[in-house]
Image (cartoon, rainbow, N blue to C red; front, side, top):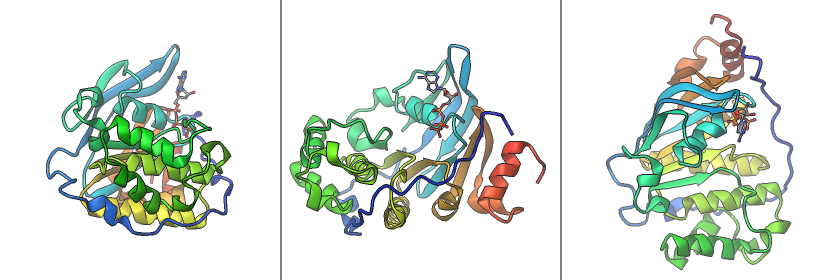
Length: 272
Ligand SMILES: Nc1ncnc2c1ncn2[C@@H]1O[C@H](COP(=O)(O)OP(=O)(O)OP(=O)(O)O)[C@@H](O)[C@H]1O
């Protein structure tokens, strides 16, 4: 097991906030899910920060119609990979393509790709509604869509509250709402269940499975093994910046009693 890989316990429960109207029909507006080019293609990508090799020659493809989990311990390189996919970090080598192009070359990116990365990166004095409205206006998305995503994420009742007073779980929901704004066919969520209570985790699981069932490409990073076992159809596993596995969840766990055991065995380099 690479020394940088550790498996941490589940995130502390920080909120008793529940909800989400469970109505994900807002995701099916119009012909929002194109039938082509929803693949995320990561090709031999590397990222070095000074002497730290965060990502080391990783290649994989994230396909539509299923939930792909991105598993790795702390410091494995998940966030760096996601940031490179979204054009927020420039690869030292290799490339990441969505729809056959780098993110920065996509036209109308909010309608092509939705992402939750740093949920806390919101203006604390803004209300949830105004945060989403500001994003919607920047992406030429109608105001009615703001109401839809507030309903879908269970934030309707707190839409008028300042985001600075939100719990971590509520902030995560706001980040998920922002990712859904453009009704995009490709979605990336980095540690989306951080701070969500059990009800929220179950709600999120239902949401992403529904998104995938609609034919979207859904890529979810996590270090919560039991959660990923229930959520992901397919797994990309990295450790120490390197690709360790790219397999269906069923294949990955076939010779282990649990996903956690399979992950720990793989990370430690023990044979299955
Ligand atoms: N901006 C940066 N400058 C320097 N080093 C960085 C930077 N971003 C990430 N790293 C390093 O790159 C490695 C991979 O980090 P990354 O955040 O991608 O991992 P992760 O799998 O998302 O981990 P976690 O689950 O803990 O968030 C780590 O060693 C980290 O310290």
